[in-house]
Length: 187
Image: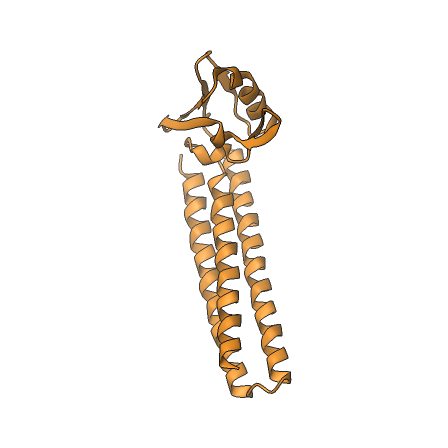
């Protein structure tokens, strides 16, 4: 029975870590007024009939805090990449100079900063919901084991471990959220 408890605890930890990693990935895609290649993570292009991420068909650089440079492996892809960036509706305007695509990151307005903070909080709440869902799954599994003959004390101890894990991951989400909000609001 102890092995089953360890498996449930480990599975719960993995689920909570995945929720945290997903949250961090989503925040990396939010624009905080500085150039970041992750802003273009969601952009895909039609590369000879295959829908490919932009990073797989080009080199993406950030030479300074306000510019992203996209240099495709093949020059004939410039127009397709430019259209894909426009279609991604990121609020960014690509400039094609025949060699590469330059994207200037405009400064954020105060209103846009507040919208981004709301978006950060929404993503944080989604991550916390995923963490609570993992906790509920673990508690349900422990109750099944209790019905199958697990000692009540072991079930109670395991439930406390799961709850501590939940508190720790929620605190981590709060910390990441606070850092991103500070980053977004910094002019």
